[in-house]
Amino acid sequence: SGQADCAHRLASRIEEATDRRYRIRITAENSNAAVTLAKGEADLYHASEHDNADLDAAFSYFAGLPFSAGLAPGDLASWLAIGGGQELWDELAAEHGFKPLLAGHTGQSPRLWSNRPIGTLGDFKGLRISAYGPTADVMRAIGAETVAMPSYRLAAALRDRDIDAAEFGGALQAMAAGVAPAGNIALETVSNGAGTAITLGISTRLWDGMSQSDRTIFTACAGEAYRLAVSENEAHEKDIMKALTDLHGVTTASLTADARAALRSVTEAVVATLASTTPRAQRVNASYMAFRRTVSPSDLATPSTEIPLV
Image 1: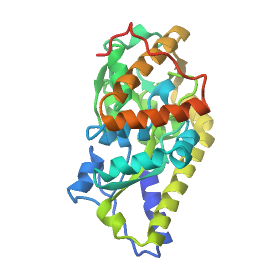
Image 2: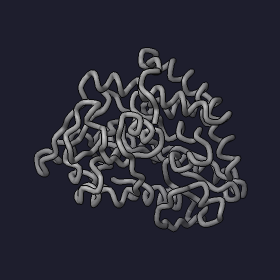
Image 3: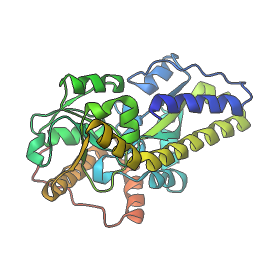
Image 4: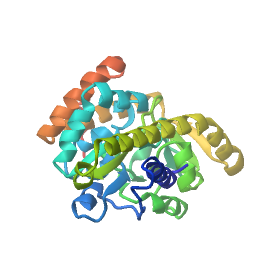
């Protein structure tokens, strides 16, 4: 199921668990989730924390860092639960008027869905790629032109060649949004991707007015939604990729070893820059990297100083 389906499923689950004391009406997506809550235009949002990065770059850590810098879905949840991540997230979000909970995921096998062959780092130069968050910074650093575009426009943009590629989760999410097969080449950029986490953001005015039991229900429903999304993406990835290949002619591809190595260095440099943007980002980065070293100590690269960041 796609992100819209996941949002509806979570809303229904919360309504059922609270005996419909809470009724949730889902409206169209908004580009800045926290600002929408602050304006009183909504009480909840279901979106990636990359949407809040304009408020503080530290938010991107809780959505998931790009490529080799990312934590696998289980590791991200562990960092939040036992590594101090949730406390840091709560502090950051409270400054902007909401309580954050993990509530979904785009899949651990994110791909670049392209209508042009890409294999080397040089192939990215001049490509129009839909990407956001730190991934967009990485793409720009290797010569691509990034385009900010809502998910519902991606399929048409790929078909009409308005963009050349879109960074958009695993096969389940891409198929649900029509990104595949509109992008008929599924490019694996790293051997072990991490994907993007989805947040249930709850306005402070709503959260503070809840009983402890209702807070527990919302937390439990969001956690269940996260685990279910991770499981669905993992279980269906291979079958959906096979269907896309057999029925729609989608082909799979991967970067050359040299390109992967260069992408890894650029990614680490982008993250180092991200960590220096705000005092909060520095604190979050220190916690994130300390936990990352415990779960994947061999997956850290030294940032390259030879590749300029654009």
